[in-house]
Length: 61
Image (cartoon, rainbow, N blue to C red):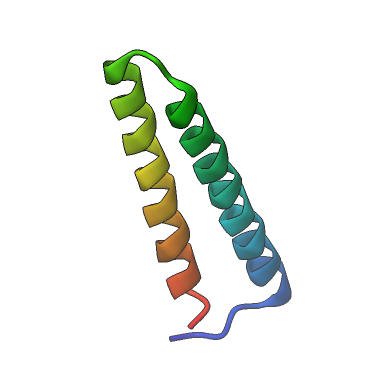
């Protein structure tokens, strides 16, 4: 595995932060949703964001 340069590392941190923000917002929206279908869609999207964040973090190790 090659070493990340500073720009790649900065971008990776930015993308991780974006996924964390998406996860937090989608979870909040799902918690406040009344319609069960909307709640399910939002929870799925939140889980997808969490999975993407974890995948991005794996590039740091």
